[in-house]
Each structure stands twice: as C-alpha cells, then as structure tokens.
Length: 125
Image 1 (tube, rainbow, N blue to C red):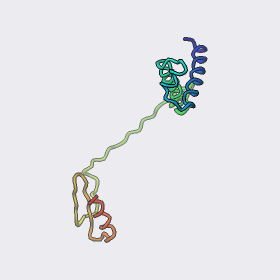
Image 2: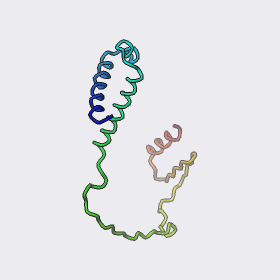
Image 3: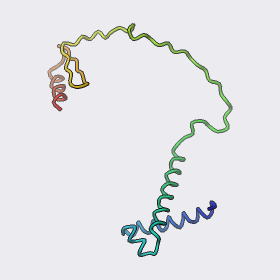
Image 4: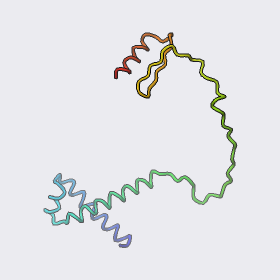
C-alpha cells in the first residue's frame, strides 16, 4: 500500500474508532451494529496505536550523534586503580552489631535514645 492510500485509510479508521469510543458501547457490539468487521477494527486499532507510539518515540528521543557532524578524535586517559587493602579502614568502631538476614546495623554507645527507638521500629517491621 502506498503512503497516500495508507494515510487516507488511517484517517478513515481514526474517525471510525473515535466514533466507536464516543458511543460508550462495547467495541464488538458497536462494530456489529455498524456493519464493520471486528477483525478489521482491531487490526486498524493496533496499527494506529503502533504508529502513534513510534511517532511519540521519534519526537521524544534526541539523537545521540548529530547528523552531518565532522569526525572527532577521542582522547584516552589512564585511570589508576587503587588496591582496596591500602585504603585506611573507617575509624568508627561499633559497640553493638545487629544482624538480620543480609542487613547489618552497627551502633555506638553515643547513639541517642530516639535513634535507637527508630532502629528498633525498623527491626520489628
């Protein structure tokens, strides 16, 4: 089907589908009462939805590379990885460690009563 014929049919089916939806009737009942093939109705509904989706996608996605741009050079930079063993440990030393499943809570003696109540509520949840 050429583009012009497709466009005309799309416009016709858009009007048919809008009329059906505006009626408030079930689609199959409306089609039977108006002599429209249910198979054709649902085929065109699917086609129009797909085209609307693709149009939306095209309008919302921005191209990663601009068209007609001159080639560019890429520079590389070396990233040195540090050894995890050489990273100093945290100075925090917990007074209490609570484990539940894969979750671990470490608490110091300086924790406030309010904080402990909140943590207790989380553990009972």
